[in-house]
Length: 155
Image: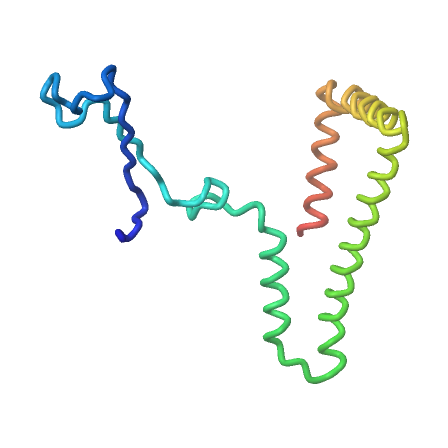
């Protein structure tokens, strides 16, 4: 059995008009109608080595964080509290996301309420754009506020 490589070639042959005729007998070609098709054994683009793995990013981050926590040698309660606080915050954030998703799913099941909320959201977004993004002075003020918040949060 041959060892698979990164790229193999599959050949497809077209059927001749006369199924009993020998392939290539008419014009001397070894195999007429052979179409080489390259076959790649690599993963799809989202999971390949060159593309960023966006699908598993939160799980990878969580695994790295837990591995880092497992590597710590915590001796006292004062050293243990920041790690426990971080785990509690992560658990609370997961619970809030799950609860929010369940609530929105339940609201979406009520007839007409989901569509009404979508309409309210669309009107609110258009109102925000009309007030802040269409006028250059307001747009500059909004960008300045965003830069100030970014500077305050990120340092």
